[in-house]
Image 1: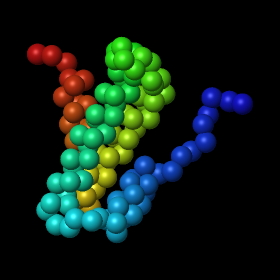
Image 2: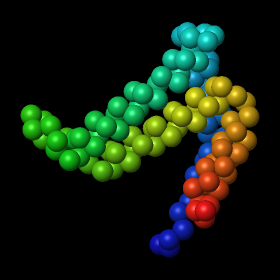
Image 3: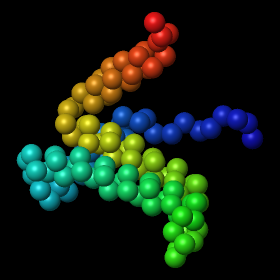
Length: 113
């Protein structure tokens, strides 16, 4: 076995597929439906917090209920949910994200002064 991993699905093709699937099953249409899709992020971030608390045993009543693999999975859910929400706002999600990532990277890695 080598250090190479098998290529996974194309990120944006998968996001488009998930967006299309969710759009056909959307119980609430229009602006409210878009807002609810964006609010889904709060639920997913809460699940990250729950996994971290569970992995560190911070709730003495429950003890250790999760592990760091659970935290990784929940973080992935946040990323997927955010990208689907972005795709819901614009069919140009790939380009919008690439431009924003470039700006954040340049700003973050710029030399001070």
